[in-house]
Length: 159
Image 1 (cartoon, rainbow, N blue to C red):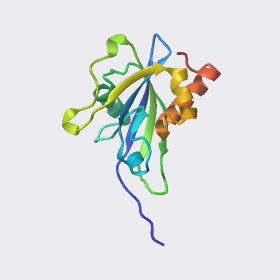
Image 2 (cartoon, helix red, strand yellow):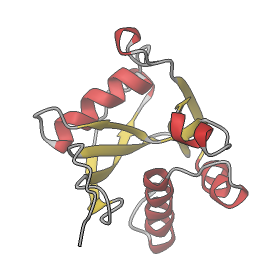
Image 3 (cartoon, one colour):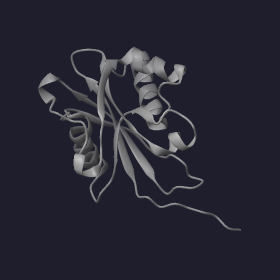
Image 4 (cartoon, one colour):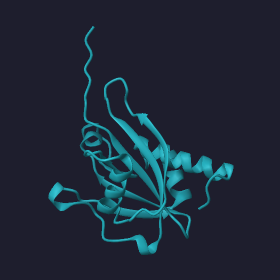
């Protein structure tokens, strides 16, 4: 038996929720695989990044500043999971984090890494409905939006 396994390291992602209004911040950026598949390559996603020798918490705080221009206030872990255990060793740790207007800076990604990121703030209900319309197709983002939706329904979170 022969198996192909890709080891790309581990990653972390965060759904950023505004403290004072029912909005979330996502980022839109170019992704080559959807383009290869003939799909829209500009995906709307939760902030995420590959761990670079740091903890998932440290990674996601760094990525939130770089990508969205947001200093995360409170951060809570939702889950650590394999996104494709048939082919990848990668485990992605998912978080929900909060921010306020004073927590914002420029964002937009790092030019020296070739990042050109659009920061998008939208009502949570709009973002959640975009799963059903196919406008949000990134698995980590879908899981985070669904986790927050469940928390809101069960009283575990408030937006």
